[in-house]
Image (cartoon, rainbow, N blue to C red; front, side, top):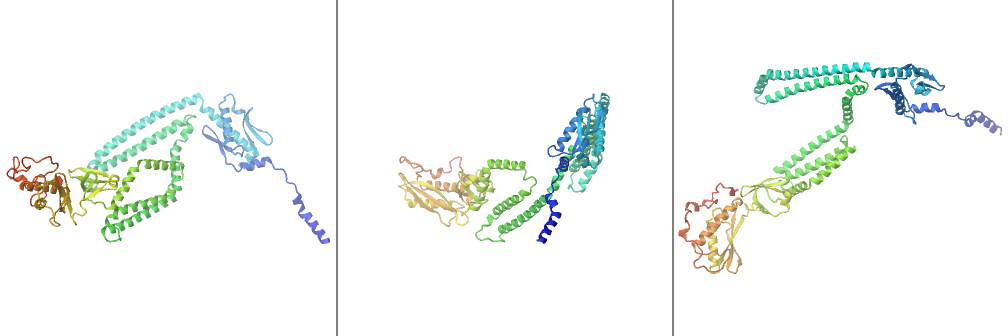
Length: 562
């Protein structure tokens, strides 16, 4: 019990005063000062000149306080009835009032002095002196005597700048002419000595460009000095004159700071571009090997190599763009996003046909419908393929016309390739004739085979064959089928084959009933052999026919020959 009592007494002596002590009331001025320490300063200005700086509190920020004080000083300076000597600093107990009579400028409190590290009276005296000097300068700058003098200075500066600009322009014009006269021969000699690698016109243009650049820099320097001087003469334009250089340098400084801040991202993009470039090179080398046959891929045609490379290249570049997008400077800004959306909308609205043709171009490549040099029929067009692009395919028609066909139209059309099997299995040319029932079919087939044998350029192996297509009302329809291995001469073969059919049927007195039959004529509709070369025809013109092959199988220089 004694020990417990002793412990209680020790606790009461040592700990109770702190536990039961009453905290003193918070000092409002100390709290304001502590709050003010957390806010930055703001300058009080007059005519663009900084007089002093003030602090603020949360309820009245430094910017708001500086603007209010500056407005009061400007109002007093603009009122000539208030003498400068009327400005006084009056001690009001916990603060110092600076003003002129009943016109208040500001209050200086102990918190302001504490933040400056000096006493309140000294701070108030310094502010009073600075304010008085600023008001005196404000009034002096706006006095009629000073304004007239400065106007005269501005006029003189304008005349001097004009004369200087005129002299500079004349000087550089003469310098340009003198340089042209002095260096022209030397430039021509340098061009001859470099074996035309360096052109005289390029050197002359570069020389004139340097002179012009110096001229522009000189003019800009004169204009800047003139504006800085002229604008600084008047109080209303003096702030602009003081910031004239900053108007040019500040954007440059901001751009430089932005570039420096973006350096890490730019380095990442540069490395990504380098890696993407080498990936594309390796991809190109791989598909070049596939195209040349050094790299063999199962069930992969060599003609697919370069189209597949283009697809792979597009995918690699698209992937690189997706990876690089977050690192592009400004990609997170709303303006960048808006421009991206706008370009996306424009691309989606205006490129539907382009995308369709691109997809159709790749589809045609993998379908292997035709290749360059093939004779094809696409819809109503017949011609030779001269170029295959992603967007369009170009044909040269039988009339030597250049046909440009969109790939999307080709994808939706029937394609007839006359060249695919012509060199291996032969292209079958066919034509039909209608012969009356009174003519033996064996005779007709024999004459058709003989006409095929007389046509040079046609293959005899496999041999020609005849199909009886129909037993019509008045005639039998025979179809002659012959083989050839030169599809680009198919139109000449048809011409010669038709000529030989007409000659043979006339020679054997067999009447062709095509296209219709109405009744037996008094005389057979055949041409007697002695009339085959009636004027103006001649025996020389019958050897190859108009635009056809000659009897030895040579092809004449004709557009129909492709």
